[in-house]
Image 1 (cartoon, rainbow, N blue to C red):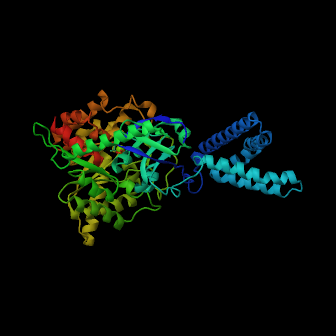
Image 2: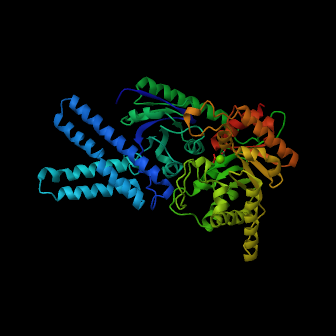
Image 3: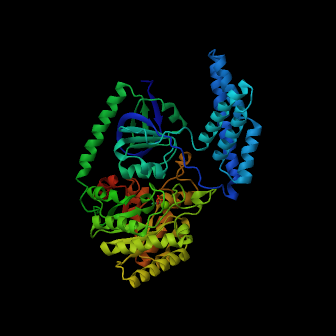
Length: 543
Ligand code: PEP
Ligand code: MG
C-alpha cells in the first residue's frame, strides 16, 4: 500500500465508497470513415500534440534512467524519442491525412508499418532491429490519439472504485452497475452528464479532481465521499475508520429521509408541487417509484440507446416508453425527444466534428434535420401514449418555428398511425426552456404548448457563457445568478399568463438551496435524480 493521497474535486453524487481501485481507460472509438474536409487541420493539430506528448514522455523516461545510471536503457528511450520526433514520419502522416483524409491514428500506424518493413528488409542487423522500435513508437502515438493506454471494462472483475480521466455518458452506460462502487474522474463538473448519471444510478462520485488523479493510478484501495467531494487513494487505517463512520451517518440520514419518500410533494402552506424523477433508461422506472417519484419529469431518451451500435427501431422504442408509462400508471411521464450532441454522442448518427458542440447540432435542431429519425421516435411515443399518461417535450428550442415544425411532424405521425389503424393515445407537448432565447420568448412559446420544463443545466451555461463541464468556471456557473433567476421568473410569468404549468428538470430542481427559489418563482413540478426525491419533499414540507 502506498502513501495516502487526497484528491479534491466536485461533490458529484452523494455516498461513501471504499474499494479496490480500477483504472478505466478505454480506447476511444476511432472516427468512422474519413476525416471530413473541415476537420483536417484539427486532426493534424491533434496528431502534433500526440507526437509531442509521446516524445516528451520518452525523453523524460530516458533522462530518469540516465540519472539512475542505466545508460543502456536510457539510449533505447532516447532513440524512441528521436523516432517520435522524426520530421519525415510526421510529414508522411500529415500528407495522408490531408490527401487521403485518413484519421491520424490509422495514418501513423500505416506509415510506421511501411518504415518498419523497409528497415526489416535491410541487410544491416542494427537497422533491421529498428523495425520494432518504429512499430512501438507508432503504436504509442496512435494510442495517445485515442486518449491514453487502453484498459476497458473487460478487466473489471470485482466491485471496485473506478478511476478515469473522463467518463463519457456512453462509457458510464456500459459499466456493469454491480461492479461499480463509485468513481473518481479528472474531468467533469456537477452538471456534466457523467455526474448526472452517477446521481440517477445512486453511485457515489467525485469528479473534476484534475491531473492529480494520475498519481492515484497505482493505488490499490480508494475511499471516496461523493457528498464532500474528495477521495483518498491508499487510505491509512485512521482514514478508513473515518469513512466507515461517514458511511454509518449517511445510512442514518437515508433512514430518516425514508419517511418522506411516499408523502405527496406539498409546501407547508399547502401548495402542491409534484416531485418527479429524471430517468435515463426504462430499467430505472421501478427504482424511481420506490424513491417516491410522483411521475417522470424527464426521460432522457438518448441514454437508452448509447450502449448499442445502431439506432433503435420504432418497435424497440415503443417497448421502452411503454414499459415506463406502465410502471407509472396514472402518473405523468414526460419523454424528451432525442438530445444528442454537446457531450453526448450516439453511434449510428454520422455527425461532423464541431468546434463548439454545445453550440452546435443538438436537440431539436438535429431532429428536424433528420426527419426519419425524429418521426420514428414520435411514432413510438404516440403509440406508447395509448398505455398511460404520457407527454412529450422538445429540447434546445430557440424559437416558435422549431416548435411548430416539431408539432407538425407529431400531427402527421398521428394521422399516419390512425390511417394504419395503429392505436395511439392523447399526447400533450411541451418545450424545454434551456436557452435564453426560449426564456425570452416564453410568452410566444406558451401559446404553442401545454407546459414548460426549465432545463437549468443548459440555461445556466448559455446565459452565463460558462461551459457546464468546465470546473474552472464553477464560481460563475450558478443557478442563483440574478440573470438566470430573471429568465426563470420571466418564463413562469409568461406561463401563468398563458395558463400553462412550468416544471424544472435541471440539476437545480433537486438542489436543496434552489428549491425555495424555484417554488417561489412559480415552478409547480420538480424533476430530479430519484435518490434526491425524499430530501426535496422534506424541504418542501418545511417551506
Ligand atoms: C438541462 O439542460 O437542464 C437538462 C435537463 O437537459 P440535459 O442535462 O440532458 O442537457
Ligand atoms: Mg439540456
